[in-house]
Every structure is written in C-alpha cells, then in structure tokens.
Length: 340
Image 1 (cartoon, rainbow, N blue to C red):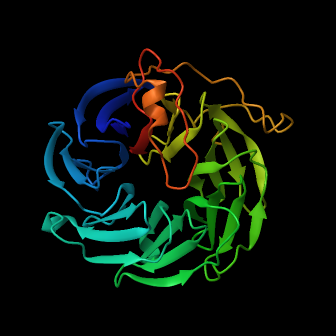
Image 2 (tube, helix red, strand yellow; image 1 turned 45 degrees about the vertical axis):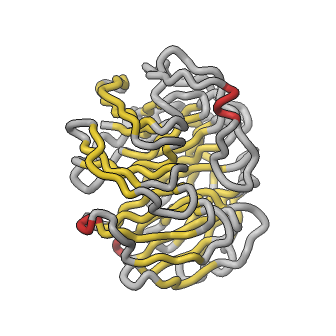
C-alpha cells in the first residue's frame, strides 16, 4: 500500500500490483496542504503533518481519521519521520523539531529543539546510531541524540540550502542534496564541513533515497530521477522522469521498487529488479546528464484536479521560489508522496 498526499490536504491510498497503481481510498486529513506522511511500524496507522500546523492519525484499514493534534507546531509542519515503534518526529517551517511518544496520543512532545534558523527540509532517523539527521533551509546539517534530544554536532553554514539527507557507507558518510544541485558528502564523525562535493545535477536536488550502502537515487527540479554511486562518485544512469520537479522518491522495503511523485500530479513506480545492476532502465553513461530519457512505462495515475492558479499559491518551503504544477492528468494521485 502506498500513501500520497496533496496540497488540498487529501491523503490517497493506492495499491500496487504488477507495477500498476490503483486508487483504493482517500480522505481529507488537513484543512490545507498535507506535506508529509509516514506509516507506523506495522502499517496499521498513517501519520500526516500539514501547513495547518496539525498532526493527524489515520486508521489505514478504515481509511478514517482516528485522532488529530491541532496546533502541534506554531507554524506549518514540513517533515515527519519515525524512530522505532514509539516515536514520531516533526519538523516545521521555522526550524523547530519535536519528538512525540505515540502512546501518549501526542499530548505533549518528549523533547523539542530549535537549532535551525529556517525550515526543516528533511530528517532521517538512524536507529543503529540512536541518532537523528536533520537538514535545513539555513544551509546546515545537524545530528541529534534521540535519547536526550540534544544536538551532538552541527555543520557550518554552507553556501546553499540543504534539502535532503541520507546516511550511507554503513554510517561512515552522510549525503545531502543542495539547492545548487551538488551533493554534499560529510564524514559521520566530522560534519563541520563537507568532506567533498559531488557535482553533476543541473538543478536543485530536492529528494534522495539510499538503494544500498554505495548507491543512491536522486530527484531534481529538472524532473529526472538519477542513480549515483558514492565513493567513488559517479552518475550511473537515469531511472526515469516526471514532467516537472520530482517531489519525493522512496524505496519500498517490501517490493524493492522505487516510488516517486512530482509536480506533474503523478505517482510512479519503477522496477529495480530487471538486471544485476539493480536498475531497470538502461544505463546510458554517454548520454548527456541534463537530458531526460523517456519514461519506461505509462503508469496509471489518479488525479486531483488542482488548477495551476491554486498550485501557485502554495509554497513548498519557506524562502524558496514558488513552483507551479503542470496541468492535471486524467488520473493523478497527488503531488506530495512520502509513505511506503
């Protein structure tokens, strides 16, 4: 089951069979844009956060709201992350991070921190290290001790916003996507400044996910989903593309497929099992990296008819330029995808 959410606050549940997506149910979870969703450990509940500052709990089987925490933050919630089976983390537009014990029905946070001076762009819980990695629009990477809620380390302010993050190389490295298109690579023990910068993307890297300890997928404003190797660094090929910025990409831990969503109002699925390299689309190393390949297949899309004018009114992140979605296709499942 896949969860996708829209700028209208609607959450969609889709099933995937033989690489075809089917809309199963949908519900209104927020009064304005729903920006992030994440399943609990067993998939029975879905948590969502939105621009209306609320944190919602959805019963997946019934596709109904089972709870809501109004005013969970003083401004819009931008990112959700799960730590273990009991803790949900939320990050907002002003840099606040809160940890919630789901057994307490979100009455009050376990801990809260305000170390960033701008929006929280991404978070990754690294349970084996009992650590939370956070990137922000203030161009910093921070590392939190999940047990105490304290900041362990924080990078210097870089030149460009950091928009996404993932640990890699068995927690020896941290990779961050930046607004200038570079991948900033940090050593785990020394996150003050990047160990190196991996160039190659023509525009902002808004999302990434780890395929294995040496390989990542990246999503960029140019709509292309790329496969990249880290240490040694190389762009290995194209997985696919959207006709608009890529909003989110996720690797399913169950099927091994990649799911992506973009500003073309589409959720797409990509097969990674077609060859030994784990990349279903042909690697075209000689192809210009700025040229997007044709999609591998035409996916079924379930669409909300958002007008271009309405989309332009929504800001994805603070201090970033407004991005307009393309015209809705006949069947799109929404533009903000985060749950697997």
